[in-house]
Image (cartoon, rainbow, N blue to C red):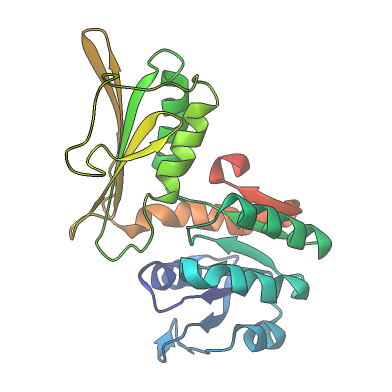
Length: 252
């Protein structure tokens, strides 16, 4: 399986490059980034379309930035290559457009807010717990270089909870903020809080409050290696899909 990594010199992209080199059924066909350098023994290109044309990859893995990922997908999907995306920050309109473009070109795009298997299980457990504990808040903690907030994982967690929980206003009905935003973002009545500090990778805690008790479901990645099994799984399975696959849980 021939893999091109877009964003190959970034924190996640460089990890993907090293992982692909270890996989017996994969070949690192090309590496692309806006910066110059070497990755996985290859010279980094700054032209993704040219790299795709020269290498004919089975899959492009994209770990770039929210500001550029949609333009990237619009340009490369007509080449009918399959894409695994770890970049976050997609709107509902973006996702609909990606699905349309992928289907029009007979290919597939896998977008995962989080490739860590622990995070996927956490979201599933949170959705189950919300059936019994409707009062819930989400705290997501990322490194201070992350550009979007809240995280895609937090948003997806909130969406999954909202599917099984009636929309409701939490807290005291006369509650008010003396500092704007201190109670966090609001999604269907539940609060999402974003921390951005050095030292974190991508932690998240979902806290449920009940009568006389609280329930905590959390995931604590130690390093970025935790994402690699999920990325490799997506690369291997995306050949079986057409259109948009949103969320790694749909491939498990």
